[in-house]
Image 1 (cartoon, rainbow over the protein chains, first blue to last red):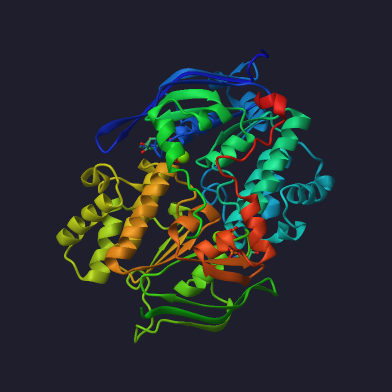
Image 2: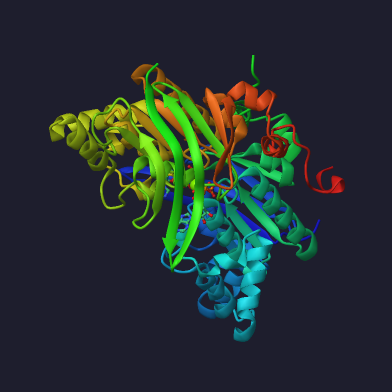
Length: 259
Length: 264
Ligand SMILES: Nc1ncnc2c1ncn2[C@@H]1O[C@H](COP(=O)(O)OP(=O)(O)OP(=O)(O)O)[C@@H](O)[C@H]1O
Ligand SMILES: Nc1ncnc2c1ncn2[C@@H]1O[C@H](COP(=O)(O)OP(=O)(O)OP(=O)(O)O)[C@@H](O)[C@H]1O
Ligand SMILES: [Mg+2]
Ligand SMILES: [Mg+2]
């Protein structure tokens, strides 16, 4: 067994919401190996995004430890934290909120390349065009403002931004749920291809169990801030042991055939 | 059944930077009262543009050809009252600085002429109707204090607050878990059945579309390529494109895309 790339241990986070405490993370632990895809599934409000945001240091935890690439993530500051940010990327659930809507597509992709010094200035337009092509977008979109492209196009720009810095782990929070099936297939192939060639790991948050089954090695099911079941993706989805897992599988949409 | 909406030879072009991009071409269909029509099709095919054109929400400067008619109305449709809109991304329909109660009650006040007190009671009832846990305290919450799925239910409550004749749901359930999604689908069915509402359900998920819709319209490159009863589209699609959508669908029986040794 290789050392995990990411080890989250005993994560705890409570929110005080309307005078009541909500345990968004109630002692959550999980690991992701290099080149592995761990899917995080669970009902709405079960704490998936909170866990993702905690990994990105966007949510302050009440307790727990996160070890990423042999570093204590929660202790990092300043330049060391910025350096880790290039290796740990996230695609957000809410693509609109993740961008400045007036920024152009080119600007959104230029930022990480510049900040992390990945590509010299003169080569950046070409690098941006390549990134757009990788996610199946026309390089012509580069001059458009974020609010001038469709939802699925915006989502792919977010994915292009995440892969720009050649990260080791990408947290994908509902990253393909806004994509139609053909584009989604293409993006999933891209993610798998990057995984095979660069050993990227994914924490893949999704409600779509068909997709989870297709691309995840393992799955962890969350409910009310706890992980209630983990196992190999195909096995858990074929034969869920927890009541949450059974309910999620039973409710998955199925093609309804005519009379 | 009376016709609620007629879309005739609709064309839409966006303008900006001196270019004009045609994104909808010659789209015609009818939606009857109480009917559920699903719109599916690839990213960028013009589904949201269609929804915005129907709602009169296209950005200024867009060019619109053809017609959108509301035969039952003798006036121009009013957003919020005659049609409700739910987007994929609830943060675009919810105001971050108002409580949930304030924003839903405001719709009931503006369009149903309720007093604030009545409007708040109405809002609480609606939050119960969309199955939000603890509606009374949710009234006092701000959008950021809710999870994505909870926010989406609030957005639906707001969209149906004035009992509009048409509800447009643009990818409204694609960010929800399957349990809530199934609940919302049941809820939408309930609303259609009880309130005689028509539904335009935009989705990428052909399985979901087949479960919720009476008819399915398939869009590609700004054109309506095929429209028919849900059963016909699933079992006997006429267009190659529709067949490819069905083939790309990932159900629970889809084989893993990972190398066999990785999943063994
Ligand atoms: N900033 C916040 N303030 C108060 N409560 C919050 C905040 N963020 C999240 N919560 C609460 O924490 C819980 C977990 O939310 P989270 O967004 O992590 O859920 P999720 O599993 O991502 O759900 P979804 O599938 O709907 O996106 C929810 O009950 C939510 O209401
Ligand atoms: N404000 C705008 N200005 C210019 N072009 C736009 C604007 N909004 C959308 N477009 C373009 O119009 C086309 C149709 O976009 P639309 O949002 O209607 O697609 P969609 O079918 O809803 O896609 P998705 O499934 O990705 O949401 C896309 O090519 C998009 O880039
Ligand atoms: Mg979430
Ligand atoms: Mg759209």
